[in-house]
Structures are given as C-alpha cells and as structure tokens.
Amino acid sequence: MTSQLYPDFRNYNPSTPFPKFTKPQIVGYFSLDENRTYHETLENLKYLCRDVFSNQETVNFDLNREYKNYVPKPESAKNEKIDHLLEFITKNYENLKDEKGEKFISSEFVCFRGLLRLLMCTPFDNREHWIISAQRYKGNIYLCALETEEKRQNEAQKTDKDRLFCSYGFKFEQYLMAEAPNARPRPELPVKEAEEFCLMYQATLNGHKMLYGAEMDGVDTKNEVKNLKDLQNVKQVELKVKREEQKYYQKQNFVKFKQIKWWCQSFLVGIERVLVGLRDDKGIVYRVEEQKVSEMPSYAKQFREYWTPSICMQFLSDFLGLVKDVMKDVDSENDVFLFEYDPKSMEEVRFEAFHGPNRHSFLPQSYLRFVQNTFPNKN
Image 1 (cartoon, rainbow, N blue to C red):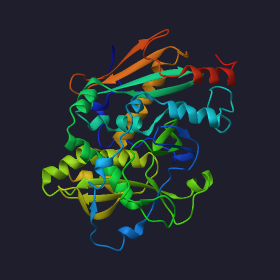
Image 2 (cartoon, rainbow, N blue to C red):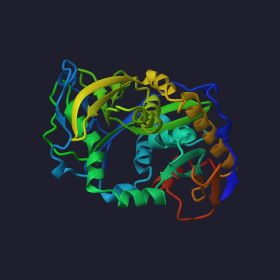
Image 3 (cartoon, helix red, strand yellow):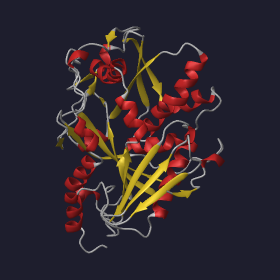
Image 4 (tube, rainbow, N blue to C red):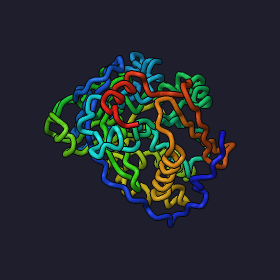
C-alpha cells in the first residue's frame, strides 16, 4: 500500500477549531423487512412511549425475555455493502440531482453514518483497524467500510453470552418503542434484528457535501408521522443500554470506548438527548435516564480529555479531503481505492489503487447502468 502521512491527527490538540458543519437535513427514508427487502415506506418507524418510564424512579425490564426466539440478521446482510443507499438514490434521483450538471447527485460523498462515526473516533481509538473502499463515478464518491480479518475472527469467536449481550439493545427498544403513537410497546415479541428503519441525511462539513443513511430507533411524538415533512419536524430518538459504572476506571473506559461513539452518531443526525437504560449483571434494566448530547464532551473532560468534538470532526473533514484529492483525476465504474488505518501497526492512513475491473468494486452493475442512462453526457 502507498503510505500517506495525512491527515496527521497526531498534531491535533484540544484547541483545534471546530470545522464548519451544517445542520443535518432529512431528505428521505426507507424500511427493511425481516428478509432485508427494501420498502420506501414508514412501515418500521417506531414511536417512543414515555409512559413506561417517565413517571417511575425504577423500572424492571428483562432484556433476556424471548431471547430463545431471537431472530438475528441473515448471513446475506454481510454482502449488502451500500446497496440500500443506492436503491434509495435510484428511487429519489429527481430530488437529489445536481442542478449544475457536474455530478450525478448534488452530494459529493455517499455512505452510511456508521462509516462517518468510525472515522470521527479514529484520533482517539488505539484499537480499531479499518479499511474503507472508495469509488468515484460521475462526480460522486461512494464510500463503503469493509470487514477486516480481525472483525471476522472476533465474530467467529463470540460466545453465546456475547451474542446475548449484543441483543440487549434491541430488546430495550422493544420496551420503550411502539408501532403507533399512543400505542403500547410489545416486549413479549421476539426481536427480529433484520428489521430496520433508516433515514437519509444531507449535511456539509467544511465544504464536503455528504449524503448518508442512518438506522434510527424511532421518534418522540404523540402524532402519527405520515410523510417526509412530518419526519423533518419531529424529534428522533436514540436508545442505549449500559451497566452503571461504579469505579473510576469503569467510567474512564466508558468515556473512552463508548461515549465518544454515542456522541458522534447522535451529533451526525442532530439528536439532542439519548435515553439510556441502566442494567445489572442479570440483564435487568432498573432505571432509564436521559443524557444530553451537548453535555457529553464536558463529561469526557473529567477523564483527561479522552476525546474532543473538534478533533473528531476535523479528522473526518481531513479524511474526506484526502479522498477527494487522491481521486481527483479518477472517474470510473471500475477503479477502486482502499484506504486503511491500523493503530497497532501504522502511523498513517495508507491507500492503494486498483484500476480496471477488479474484485474490490462494490457498485452493482444495475446501479451503474441507471446512472449512465440518467446522466449519459457526463464523463
């Protein structure tokens, strides 16, 4: 791989200015059913039921409930890449197109929120190895996070207990979220992990315009959401589960490895508060508390400034700038660039180019044909 000492995040410091970031705007949505089939509907949108926790000092939510009937995502989900985002684009091209005729759609970068969050955490993460695949076609750059060998091994080595713990977040959602406003949650049903509701956002970071999809837990409203305009005017909900930390080192680890991810993914979609279920070692949630996203950085400062928002966002901005610079002379349905960073063995972000038809290409032929037919005169 070609070495590239850039962006040099080792020179960042807490006084690094916060880059210009526009308010994220919701531009669309879609649902995925239990078979991972795409539906451009509000079918899987969930509504927060505050009555089950807001007037109670303690609750008793058993996160083990119906685990024996838990339905995980199918193995085929690992091969989805960014296919669902591309399907959204093909169905909503008229609302996303570049009026200047310089790009297929008006955004420069297309990806999932999880990839952006991964990059934002990089300056403070000394464990996570990542590889990001990039293709530039008709003026737009598509980004896709790849599964590393370490992640494959970790997944293969998961115990039954590990998988149980991973299911807790989904079950917690079932205790708080209902299928309709003013309805009751149904935690007696088994979790179907494959079902999702995703929102599509547009935002601009230091001039880099992004279109990204984000799986959302639900909305906080007593009124039925019927369309895109309704979605744009209600508060989105983010739910998390954790063990309540008792000792200093436990709080320190929470800030370093989890809270930074909570802040990043919430900030990217404009969420102001996170609902947190505090559980014991038996998987029983005994209290629900709200955490303000704006206060998370101040909490982190108590633990030797493990992370700062400005550095998170500056690294993301610098990385996008790097990708754009490296790929400025490339616009092809075949050429792929792999960007890689491993904190255990690398001091810099590295990249490698693969030209011509190759196994790293992740844009489906059906999508490429659609773009070509819709945008035929742009090379």
